Length: 54
Image (cartoon, rainbow, N blue to C red; front, top):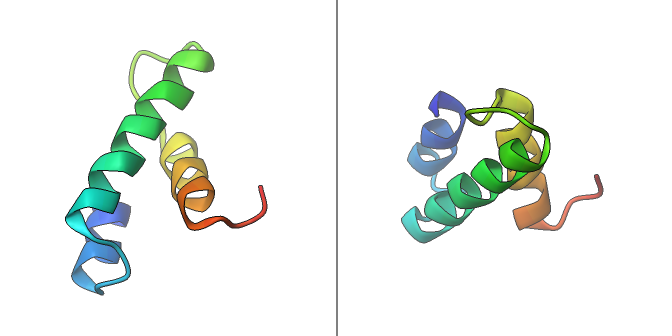
């Protein structure tokens, strides 16, 4: 969460975008068989949200 809050503080992410990234990270964690999202899930969700190449 610190990674996302830093992005929010630097105004590179909106609260709505933060929520969407968190939801996507939970989905990715579920698909990977993790009980909770890992940092890799959050970073991948962030990259997918901003349209970066994976």
